[in-house]
Length: 433
Image (cartoon, rainbow, N blue to C red):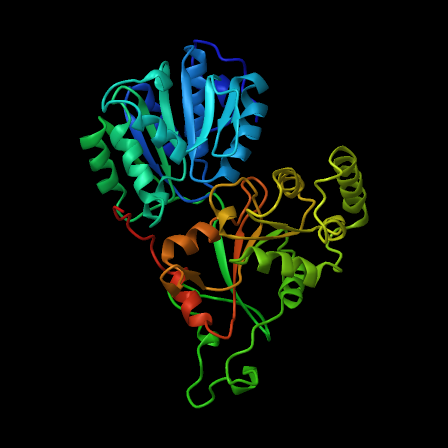
């Protein structure tokens, strides 16, 4: 939605011509009372709207707003979104790579850049860079848990002048009250706005070489008994030559989704090479109908005519068939095209790294999590509950789907037991880094 021209009369009905959820109303009331907020709600529940209200209000009062995100890709997308919503000239961008219109009233930046700005200012004072800034939105605030990046959020909050309102937007975490208490101490009066309501409920599935099955039992508390290993049988037939369970192929998994009308899907693979390899593997599939194919062809041809250098080798032909990759190794222009086509429902599967789970607006009916463990700098480990929920939460399009689907996949190393454990886990607490 595009916002009306800012007027000093902050009439919610004219800004949001639809019903707001209770948590959104509460957050807006707190901001209007001059307090900072921590908004904790599931991925996809509409937290961004609270940040957009703070932006609208600042514009109406002739003030400025900083909008910070953990990733350059997310900052670039917010720049495009906000230009559409608030007007091209009102939005600027600061990342390690780009400085665009840095005096704009709405300035999108990575959280690192914001923290570095504050370094140059004595604690508690408003330096040159923060003149007229009414509010700072800290998007994806649960990134505080990230071992390498977490300190950036904490330092940003500690160094931010008390008179600047903070709106910290976070996926659900176990100790949101602790985070709010800490903000009250180091920054100023802060309200916790918590919601565990998902507008589109999630259904969990498990895919193995025999098919696609419900992952959980009827009460959604434990593993589906049909997926438990029978004593003495050990599921020998599904074992590969090395004695480990076999994984279903990507084409097989996609065909299961297509048969059940579960596309479009985001298919998470934890390496850039893996995403590109997946596109090559399934690139001959046609996932679009003739009408969609026609629209795709027009838009892609138009893009390539304008950006002949930006076409990604090996990925142009699959894109015509509704298949794409999305990761940090892709040129921004091509990535923006993929995001745009996916938002229109023209791309049916996008193979993406975990980055896509961090708030990038690409709603899907289904998310596929291809493996439940990942390599980290300290070795191989099972995903934690928050990482799993963040990816799962990208499923289910508000206003379009009655239900979102999360598909976990058998691998030689993890099966239904690990998937059910993560599918029934509560979010992790935030830990100071």
